[in-house]
Amino acid sequence: MIIVEGIDYIVIPTGDIDNSVKFYSELFDFETIEERTGEFAIIGLDSVNIKLLHTNGTKGALSEAKSPVLSFVLDVDDFTEAIVELESKSVQIVRGPEARDGGEFLHFLDPSGNILEINYKES
Image 1 (cartoon, helix red, strand yellow):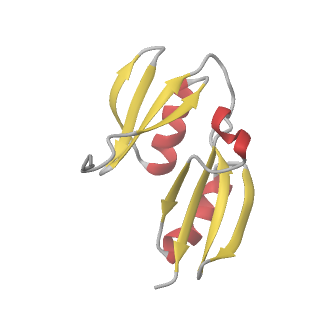
Image 2 (cartoon, helix red, strand yellow):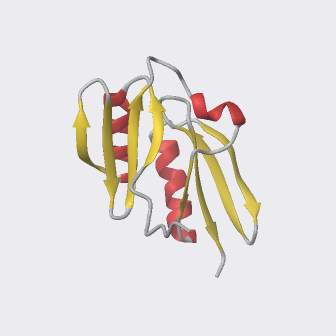
């Protein structure tokens, strides 16, 4: 058995690394950890790291399944504030907010068309 101690990063495809870095940095306050121009950028905050991988302009390759590539858990107050933030930045909301499992979720798109999710559950 292989014992996993954590996840180093999650890969998200993008046709425009610079635009994606700007989106995630401005929306989630992620910082650039490593960058190889034209190939990838690793961004993150605390224990959440994302590798934005250049994909020759393919938009939303992982979103063909209509499922989020990442889901961020928030508390209920932050969830409400996050919706206001998304709307103020004209981020495209594709589903929600909707009730689920004693909380709510919302799906939205990043600049490459990947579906992201924010959610909370009542304690």
